[in-house]
Amino acid sequence: MADLTTKHAITFDADRVTKRFSSWDRGEHEREWRGLTLLAEHAPGLAPQPLTCALTAEPPSITMTRLPGAPLRGTHLDAAQTAAVAAAVTRLHEALPRQVLTAVPLRPWCVGEAAATLRSWYDARPGPHPDPLVERAFGEGARWLAGPDPDRLAAAEPPPVLGFADGNLANYLWDGEGNGSGDGNGSGSGSGDGACVRLVDFEDSGRSDRAFELAEITEHVSAWSDSHLPADALLTHFDLTREEAARLRDARRLCTIIWLFLLWGDARADRPRNPPDTLPGQALRVLERLGSR
Image (tube, rainbow, N blue to C red; front, side, top):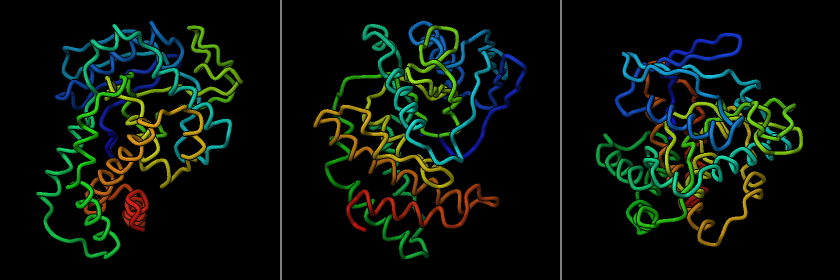
């Protein structure tokens, strides 16, 4: 679950990027190096190729190839871009053989951790929000969280995938020119239609499941606040089982409530990163997901 801040120093050269971590107590540097190394072997061209690392330095750093393309954040995704996002995500989820994937640690903010953290946030909430709409969303979220769905989500063991754990459209690079072959030369995400999306920023990557990863993408604040990701159209590219569809529904509910808290914190900051109407907009999304609008 990506947060609202840019945490690290990024240096760009003509053909490479160096990322210096300003915080690494959660193992961000190790996860990024692991994710890039695995994808360089099993899905070349989908993500930057790792070049060198200084994982024990302070701060740790990773140097990787620089990918072509522009971030999708701030855009209204058309059908080709939406399909290319789906192709990139599918390739990521199918990249690792099962025996390799089982050795990958769980992603941060896995379902169980997310639900437990959310309950702790409710316990620490200082009082009602002054906006009735926002407070109603908090109340509906609390009722859902007290029910059986979050624990059922956490207890399930769906088939694992390599999770990006990041729905921020800033980390989905579109060039519209790649040949989609994914041939190891940075030439595509596997979309096969000349429209290419590549992925950057793997510091939260880890073992996850497809439904929760799709919830992460469709409910990230960037999907609707300053961009438009057509979630329904995106999801048509995934052949979900009945169990996955039910899990996706509840995982999206969980993610919307998490974002309600994150955006409330942002709204109270000295220098909010989002416009004032973002929090009420998120409240409407919570009520819509919970069927309470």
